[in-house]
Length: 292
Length: 281
Image (cartoon, rainbow over all chains, first blue to last red):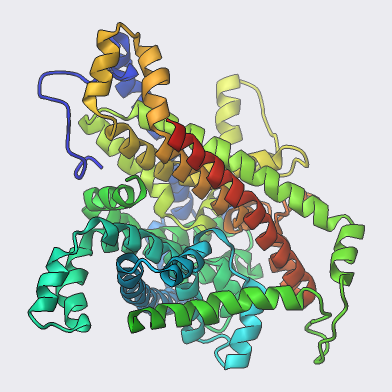
């Protein structure tokens, strides 16, 4: 947003928001900082101090400073006991093919849907994007996977995610393709390029901004999903959220808040790191797709 | 034209077919306890309706979705207005409000379960401020826990709403603001009469995504209350998960169909209504 949207305010002149009454300009930083501390700081603080406590101290998780700082030990215990590396690998195994597949199939279909204005493509588009709104049939999809012999497999899980998120991609990309002039594609076509070459060489590079938005959203959804994973892979494949659920509900870990929060830290770190490095891109990516 | 094939093949197999199956298996006695599946007509619906589960789960889901839509948009909008100017502090603050959006909903749920325990962090802070012991069980109240869980859901997603509203605020042309200023409109009046109507597309997007996200919600409720106390926070997806785990596949399918119909019935009018408002303006 800050990076992408052109700034219309000429230098030296304030925008007329309610945000520039004089008292407000003074007060605003204080209010903003206080809200960050209260709404984000307190919960994150709880995660950090609890993850650093001993088991006895963490039984009633509170905001107090740990008597004995053992964050590193807890992280290591979770890492080995809960087998985080396997779960991490499981998550990657699902997320990467899903994102690649959904972007590729989605943008191929979107190109056709955006460029051909027939009654058939209009109907297909309507069917395709209805998935944004309509909830997937989680129970019967399991039955279907069983009949296909894909129950509990990575392929089945990827297929289910593809079915769920293709509609989002088709919606975003079709809207985007419609804003690109056709002249480039036509030029390539008259030069004798086949549709595959036109798509790969001309269309796909133009789609980069919208594909970035879609990548961010879908990574976020799939990386954190636990609901669909419960139904499809259950306990046969470990992903990070599934593993966290098991850690948190297993009798062994019951009320072991220090381990639960150590897990939360381990699990969130990759995403927080990505946010810290690429926050501008992420922010502009999320917003540019949403508000046209 | 064959470019359409992979996407629609996947949609057909993994989205359309299961949905059609929903309409079939909701009328059978499919379960984990026996191998054959027989049609039973509307028995599943009748059972769920007669023991009250159907309507209570429906009511809870709708209440939850409405609460989330309201809270998430209020918070997101307030944050967007608060952090609108591009100062350094505001930029940092925006990134902080994005952290919950990136976190796993399950992790958010556990975080608040710990924070809202009777002897947890929130009550600790309230006791310290009020100078008297405070031990309200936020997540064990049969009336108010649904509101608390909806607040947690809104907390997780308010950063996303904030971003969308911020983007919306920035798209408002400066000359419109200029015109309002020349006409002598006060700040508040400019804000409410000029700026907020122009945010209609952002409102549409945010309300629609909040409603749909919460009707499909699961993780946060599962991790905070698990549907309790006394099943007062048992939204449809929790019910589906629970009955599926018990091997009552037909019941789970029936509820899944109910959720499908509910979302279809609710989403289309809501989006239509919001779109229409955009056109008028």
